[in-house]
Image (cartoon, rainbow over all chains, first blue to last red; front, side):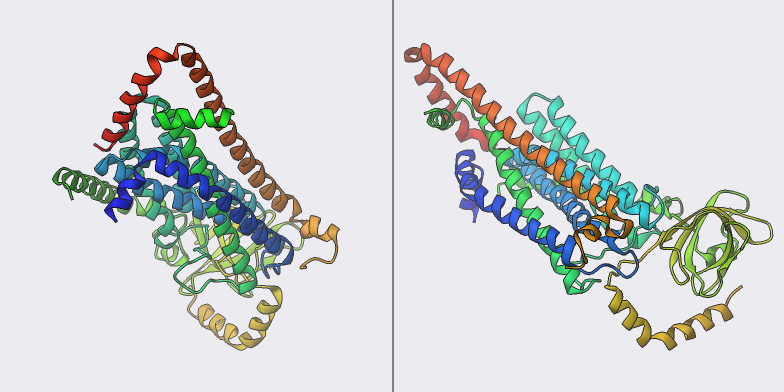
Length: 247
Length: 157
Length: 79
């Protein structure tokens, strides 16, 4: 266990693993995501109340779900950065933050477009929507802080602290719809309980969530590799790698 | 675990606990402001201020919607199955607006206990189902629905 | 298929613009992110290659020490 943990800290070892994983993540993700979306768009029945506008759920929920999951993963990595000083954990945080920001933006945007025909408004300052907007700003803050400090070690620590401070927002997002009166409805896609929709709607939703997870994995691998190439550029193995790619 | 790492882990956990407590207390103190709307029971109990722009939310009571044939004016009762409030609104209602459906209305309470709304939003729940299923459910529970309604109007204000 | 025709699929009983805007923006942004990430990677590789060919010219004196120095840097990366 500990040996695996230490191996994981080796950028070279990770680089090789990522190379092997990436095709699977990308193609698996694309297949699952497209299966889920095409099923959801064209074959799932329409909703009795909202009609066809509910089909936005098949991208809204995966984006929102991933936006929060990515932040939780970043928080775990931040603890590893602060306690074990593992460089790869910081590499993950820096690589994942822009992807998380895009996913959060997508969740907010698709929610706004969906809210117009169903609720009657693009935006309302209710607890769920506001806490999600705070998540977007947290992602921006992480990106900006990481870019602002050039020293690798202090940048890693500062960013890790910011990520950890922001993690309290995650339970607020999740439970906002239960703790307060909100316009936003409670969660439809639940992992622990029976879903609040029939199988022919729930299965495509599950497929697109899983697909987006795999695609996030691909993004994380690729962007971490890039970050490693920059940080480890003076090592022998990176030089060998660059030369090998040249020929 | 290495003692230094253990110490760092404890510091990190304390940091997290501290922030969680701080944020928890803040949200608890602000809980009334975070609520998007007052429900009818709160309004009937007089918790909502008069003549200040507030939001009221609840279910549109079955059989309470009165449309003015001359204009876009509409009147309906919003209920939480304990109390209900009469809402007055002039304008276009969202597609999802219907009797038995959730709504959030923005406007002011008048002195005579009516709520004059300038905006009405539809609120829906987390349940999705195909139209056929909804029809079947409706048929199966048709009698029960009416009974609930009777009760709620009986207990009205 | 939940729709009778292709037109019905596109129109979605009037909700078409909302649904298709969402799907469009979703793929546009994810596509841009893929493009940007790959572009960054190519740029880093190109920069490294330039760096390598520049130091490669006076290689006999520099390349050896640099390699050993950085090797130790990897080892102490944990704390």
